[in-house]
Image (cartoon, rainbow, N blue to C red):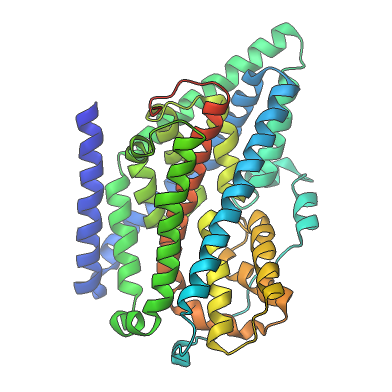
Length: 407
């Protein structure tokens, strides 16, 4: 079994290399392989709702009491808010030190098409309660509503009578087991899916060298901040608070991280993340089924960091006077906006417009960073997934679980 896992990682790596070569040299023939990525993404999205619903209901039903659920929820929210804040501060520190926007080439500014409307934090909280649960089940962007109903359903299973409680608990345990087997089947096709996705993305890039020369410093700041958060901050949290080996956990997360990098979608990668965290890192289903779906929706360390750096870069490039109070507003707004943005199309750009509005800068200036948004999106999504998985490990250890990756 260990050999098969190593082979899968090598298959994905080879697929990445071949996809980049194909995307560069065979742009006109990209339609021959792009469908592989589309089919793979559709397969992942197909299982998101049933997997999340069955796993959360099963996990909450097995928790046993409202006290356990409340304690787990408080730990999860505390972890997500803390790591997102650390990520934003890391980005803010680097962008102030390096000043990538000073003297930036404004010729790469792109026209901003009309963005989807954003919601206030209050409206996002209200919309968590679905007015029609069946409509929510048919929409992958309404993940918070699915999570809310699943938690509610799972909790009241614990309040049911003995026979009904046992029947429903066994049913959802069995349903979750079936969904995980389907997930493992889809994982086998990950190399083919990644080949199609990455080849298509590479083929879409025009004037890549000129773009890197102009926006390279900005991209370098974003990638450096993401690297510090992923390689230093989160591993320290795992080791010091989670009392686990960060390298072992990273090894178990290779497939989900490569998939997140390729798909730029936390939700689409969620089935693979759950499989790796449970089967390879040893986190129990009752922890992973609660923390990971919630994390894929509201915990966006990489995205929040990116938005902070992007807004600061815009301010520096256009010569805006950036005060200390402006930076405080940027940090707070980036943190709050990240909670409700996951289900919005083009979420990253929507979050930037929210921050720009909060500090009174023109929304048109977001066009400056559009050219490299697609490239950076791959890296920040991988950071989001890594943070989610680290949270599952930390919370599992705090609950007294014995893990495969512990020290």
